Amino acid sequence: MTDSNPLLLNVGFIIHQTVGYVREFPFDFERIFLPPDTELTNLRGVVRVTRTAQGLLLQGNLQAEMKIECGRCLVEFPQPLQAEFIDLYAFTQNSVTESGLILPENGKINLAPVLRDEMLLSVPINPVCRADCKGLCPVCGENLNVSDCEHHRQEGDPSPDQLRSLPE
Image (cartoon, helix red, strand yellow):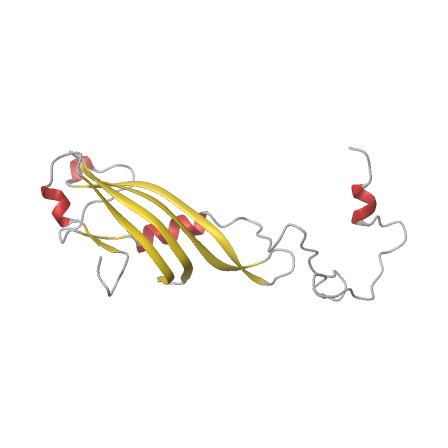
């Protein structure tokens, strides 16, 4: 790995190894930016590179956190994320898989685009800061986790507590 781009793996030496050779690249970063717009914190994990007859097989298992907005209260919080991927970087066009990845001539693989895609795919559709998040008041927009507002439910509108007490 290089200091200028820690996600640029120098794997050129693995090309000359025998089939089955394995090298692990550990990751441990407090903060890392993935262009064009993604910042991760606490990135940890390993990418394993295996020499195959067709190319280099990359197997990644990485965890990180990303600040995102709660779908209920709109407060930003650190969302834990996990990325697991398996990609073959082919030696020749004939060995290319459906991913379309070919090993660059310089023998360096930039993991930033793959990692960015995998991390963004692991973001929940409706993230919540905590399971008991109360969200926002539909009338005034007050964050109900911070304080209660003076708005009352209309007559006949069941409260969540009343709904929870109903038999299943």
